[in-house]
Image (cartoon, rainbow, N blue to C red; front, side, top):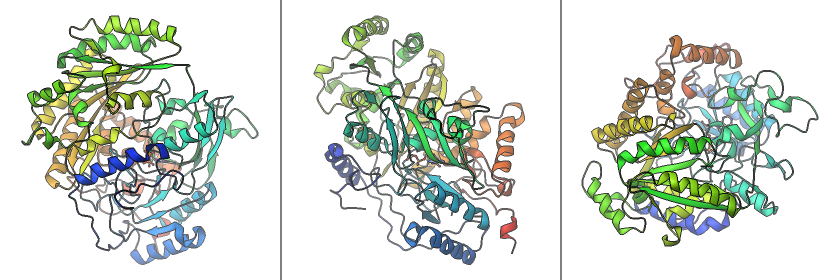
Length: 602
Ligand code: ADP
């Protein structure tokens, strides 16, 4: 990792920062290192050998792979685990661990340069029965980052050498990308070509890969915020090495791959999202037309209970497209945390920050005292916006005390302006700042979904708050409102260097997952460590869905090499050996061995 004042640029590295965000990145990095007390481990480590293969055979197998890919493209993970930070993240482990640092760690990282090389790696993994774990960028922070689920897996870092934007089509408003293309990179490329008529949709931070985020069903904040719904066409290397193109991609010479997602026959794309059934090497994405104007707005609501009527107001407006984007309803503690300062600046006690303390702070801010902030954007020319904004204003103000915040009063560095850029498809780096809430700040998410209803919002809010209070953790909820559903995103921010805080985060999450399931709520996405538990809540009809997934897994991946355990789907050779993680497994991520395959029986 570079010095404290250096940040790699996008022009130098596929995962780098665009020039216009360099200063922000330097500041963000400085803030993170100011609160960091975790010492960087400098001890040389022995590489972790995955279960089911002997060390000598494994090392020889890696040498064989290096003969095919080139020595520099097979890197044994025998070095210290360096966490870095968002812009200089590791590809060997989760830089935000909730277990011991050495639990979810790769044995080696390999760098293919083409689909053919990905095929070679997959065939190699089958030959030696080595678990492999694909990442595009590895910035899936809060959900496991770059870490593999099975300790000692070989991580396939696709992004480093496969980062081409293969096509940007200004007539169809589509693009075709490789795994290493970040939202930053796609945005820069469209700007550089002068395609002002096209927007991209981006998540809160722009450093993730378009493919990685979409496969994990991440969201953004324009009307194209449901990334999975907006993709069109995949190229996939299957666990046995064959390559397929989905949708229209299966028809040679077609020009519709990025414009019609379904093709003919069963729609197979879903099999490759949040799954371990294949490695995506290319993906098509649709782009949004520039709406010809846009305007952010923000409303403040006074009381916790305002959430209930607010959701009832939002639902018909959102479904009717008067509220047009994936909006956020954020809790007031977040208004303070996103300033990027440690919580000790406001409160030095243990346990959750008391309400009167954060309310005092809010009163000093231009936004003033509140409990909830609604961040939204209206799109189109002024007269179209005015029509919608008037309806919104009338409806929102039905809640006593609701206030529209005049953006004119907000300073340039106010978080509102970051949301404004993001909802207009311009990537930013501000969201990151709340990790500094505690020293060695890490975050892990609890993300249940529900319809856009007041009772559901209150139930989920109360459920989360109760458990956070019990475990002494600050509660930072935000509701992201999709078209007919909302994701509650609760980020637990914890000191990753403190085993007690890590355990509290883990325990709190496990309780919330169970509580939510009892009420009929499930998570849309989760951290590697929680995948078994979450998968187990989707157990209707005697686990029929998991049985179906296992059938597919056994058929597509007979040797069980592809991301074993991802989304709770374990290959046959791992099943019944205690690999699943739940409340009982505590901090242990490994099971007791794997069954032998033909290739390991020598
Ligand atoms: P990002 O950096 O874009 O947030 P990651 O590269 O960390 O995303 O990947 C997010 C998740 O999606 C991980 O669980 C990873 O295994 C999976 N994934 C990422 N890229 C691919 C790919 N090209 N093929 C299959 N799975 C992938």
